Image 1 (tube, one colour):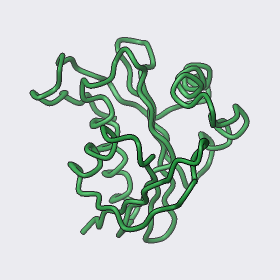
Image 2 (cartoon, helix red, strand yellow; image 1 turned 135 degrees about the horizontal axis):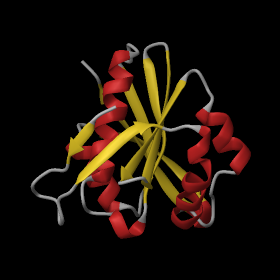
Image 3 (cartoon, one colour; image 1 turned 180 degrees about the vertical axis):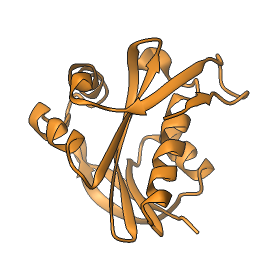
Length: 160
Protein backbone atom coordinates (compact mmCIF):
# COMPACT_ATOMS: atom_id res chain seq x y z
CA UNK A 1 0.00 0.00 0.00
CA UNK A 2 1.06 3.59 0.21
CA UNK A 3 2.26 6.15 2.65
CA UNK A 4 -0.41 8.77 2.12
CA UNK A 5 0.53 12.37 2.81
CA UNK A 6 -2.37 13.91 4.65
CA UNK A 7 -3.73 17.06 2.92
CA UNK A 8 -2.56 20.53 3.95
CA UNK A 9 -6.07 21.60 4.97
CA UNK A 10 -6.17 18.95 7.68
CA UNK A 11 -6.10 20.07 11.30
CA UNK A 12 -2.83 18.36 12.27
CA UNK A 13 -0.86 16.90 9.38
CA UNK A 14 1.03 13.64 9.80
CA UNK A 15 1.91 10.72 7.60
CA UNK A 16 -0.42 7.76 7.84
CA UNK A 17 0.62 4.36 6.61
CA UNK A 18 -2.11 2.36 4.91
CA UNK A 19 -1.91 -1.36 4.27
CA UNK A 20 -4.16 -4.32 3.59
CA UNK A 21 -5.91 -5.51 6.74
CA UNK A 22 -5.18 -9.01 8.00
CA UNK A 23 -6.80 -11.23 10.60
CA UNK A 24 -4.18 -10.02 13.10
CA UNK A 25 -5.83 -6.57 12.87
CA UNK A 26 -9.26 -7.90 13.88
CA UNK A 27 -9.06 -6.93 17.59
CA UNK A 28 -8.08 -3.34 16.77
CA UNK A 29 -10.70 -3.08 14.01
CA UNK A 30 -13.41 -4.36 16.35
CA UNK A 31 -12.45 -1.89 19.08
CA UNK A 32 -12.84 0.98 16.60
CA UNK A 33 -16.05 -0.56 15.20
CA UNK A 34 -17.69 -0.80 18.63
CA UNK A 35 -16.59 2.71 19.62
CA UNK A 36 -17.89 4.26 16.39
CA UNK A 37 -21.07 2.23 15.97
CA UNK A 38 -22.31 1.28 19.46
CA UNK A 39 -25.88 0.63 18.29
CA UNK A 40 -25.12 -1.34 15.15
CA UNK A 41 -21.54 -2.60 15.22
CA UNK A 42 -20.74 -5.54 12.99
CA UNK A 43 -20.17 -8.81 14.80
CA UNK A 44 -16.65 -10.13 15.12
CA UNK A 45 -17.58 -13.12 12.93
CA UNK A 46 -19.03 -10.87 10.21
CA UNK A 47 -15.92 -8.68 10.19
CA UNK A 48 -13.60 -11.71 10.12
CA UNK A 49 -15.57 -13.05 7.17
CA UNK A 50 -15.24 -9.73 5.35
CA UNK A 51 -11.47 -9.66 5.84
CA UNK A 52 -11.22 -13.00 4.04
CA UNK A 53 -13.74 -12.31 1.26
CA UNK A 54 -12.05 -12.54 -2.18
CA UNK A 55 -14.44 -9.90 -3.56
CA UNK A 56 -13.41 -7.48 -0.84
CA UNK A 57 -10.47 -5.34 0.13
CA UNK A 58 -10.07 -4.11 3.68
CA UNK A 59 -7.45 -1.59 4.67
CA UNK A 60 -6.08 -0.27 7.94
CA UNK A 61 -4.53 3.12 8.62
CA UNK A 62 -1.64 3.11 11.04
CA UNK A 63 0.02 5.70 13.23
CA UNK A 64 3.29 3.93 13.80
CA UNK A 65 2.21 0.36 14.54
CA UNK A 66 -1.18 1.37 15.97
CA UNK A 67 -4.38 0.84 13.94
CA UNK A 68 -6.23 4.16 13.91
CA UNK A 69 -8.80 3.47 11.20
CA UNK A 70 -10.07 0.95 8.71
CA UNK A 71 -12.19 0.80 5.59
CA UNK A 72 -13.63 -1.94 3.42
CA UNK A 73 -14.80 -2.34 -0.14
CA UNK A 74 -16.60 -5.08 -2.02
CA UNK A 75 -16.29 -5.13 -5.81
CA UNK A 76 -18.12 -7.52 -8.11
CA UNK A 77 -18.42 -7.00 -11.85
CA UNK A 78 -18.73 -3.35 -12.75
CA UNK A 79 -19.93 -2.21 -9.31
CA UNK A 80 -18.19 -1.59 -6.02
CA UNK A 81 -19.63 -0.81 -2.62
CA UNK A 82 -17.89 0.85 0.30
CA UNK A 83 -18.88 -1.52 3.10
CA UNK A 84 -17.55 0.44 6.07
CA UNK A 85 -15.10 3.08 7.17
CA UNK A 86 -14.20 4.31 10.64
CA UNK A 87 -11.43 6.31 12.28
CA UNK A 88 -10.60 6.43 15.97
CA UNK A 89 -12.07 9.55 17.53
CA UNK A 90 -8.67 10.88 18.62
CA UNK A 91 -7.43 10.77 15.00
CA UNK A 92 -10.40 12.31 13.20
CA UNK A 93 -10.23 15.48 11.09
CA UNK A 94 -6.63 14.74 10.08
CA UNK A 95 -7.21 13.25 6.64
CA UNK A 96 -7.16 9.58 7.62
CA UNK A 97 -10.63 8.84 6.19
CA UNK A 98 -9.75 10.75 3.02
CA UNK A 99 -6.60 8.67 2.55
CA UNK A 100 -8.51 5.42 3.18
CA UNK A 101 -11.25 6.41 0.73
CA UNK A 102 -8.74 7.31 -1.98
CA UNK A 103 -7.16 3.87 -1.62
CA UNK A 104 -10.57 2.16 -1.80
CA UNK A 105 -11.48 4.11 -4.93
CA UNK A 106 -8.18 3.15 -6.55
CA UNK A 107 -8.92 -0.49 -5.70
CA UNK A 108 -12.43 -0.22 -7.15
CA UNK A 109 -11.01 1.22 -10.37
CA UNK A 110 -8.35 -1.50 -10.58
CA UNK A 111 -11.09 -4.13 -10.32
CA UNK A 112 -13.01 -2.59 -13.21
CA UNK A 113 -15.79 -0.93 -11.25
CA UNK A 114 -17.70 1.64 -13.27
CA UNK A 115 -19.72 2.85 -10.28
CA UNK A 116 -18.98 2.84 -6.55
CA UNK A 117 -21.81 3.08 -4.01
CA UNK A 118 -22.03 3.80 -0.30
CA UNK A 119 -24.61 4.56 2.36
CA UNK A 120 -24.16 7.35 4.89
CA UNK A 121 -26.29 8.42 7.83
CA UNK A 122 -28.41 11.44 7.01
CA UNK A 123 -27.19 13.06 10.25
CA UNK A 124 -23.47 12.55 9.47
CA UNK A 125 -22.63 15.79 7.67
CA UNK A 126 -18.82 15.45 7.96
CA UNK A 127 -18.93 12.09 6.15
CA UNK A 128 -21.30 13.44 3.50
CA UNK A 129 -18.91 16.35 2.90
CA UNK A 130 -15.95 13.97 2.53
CA UNK A 131 -17.80 11.78 0.06
CA UNK A 132 -18.96 14.77 -2.00
CA UNK A 133 -15.35 15.99 -2.10
CA UNK A 134 -14.45 12.63 -3.64
CA UNK A 135 -17.13 12.93 -6.34
CA UNK A 136 -20.00 11.01 -4.75
CA UNK A 137 -23.52 12.31 -5.33
CA UNK A 138 -26.69 11.40 -3.45
CA UNK A 139 -29.26 9.57 -5.52
CA UNK A 140 -31.77 7.99 -3.13
CA UNK A 141 -32.79 7.70 0.51
CA UNK A 142 -33.39 4.56 2.54
CA UNK A 143 -35.86 5.69 5.20
CA UNK A 144 -35.18 4.48 8.73
CA UNK A 145 -32.19 2.37 7.64
CA UNK A 146 -30.07 3.04 10.74
CA UNK A 147 -30.93 2.48 14.42
CA UNK A 148 -33.13 5.18 15.86
CA UNK A 149 -34.94 5.55 12.55
CA UNK A 150 -32.16 7.60 10.92
CA UNK A 151 -32.33 7.62 7.13
CA UNK A 152 -29.47 6.44 4.92
CA UNK A 153 -28.43 8.55 1.99
CA UNK A 154 -27.25 6.30 -0.82
CA UNK A 155 -24.48 7.95 -2.80
CA UNK A 156 -22.73 6.91 -5.99
CA UNK A 157 -19.61 7.85 -7.86
CA UNK A 158 -19.04 7.16 -11.53
CA UNK A 159 -15.49 5.91 -11.86
CA UNK A 160 -14.93 7.01 -15.47
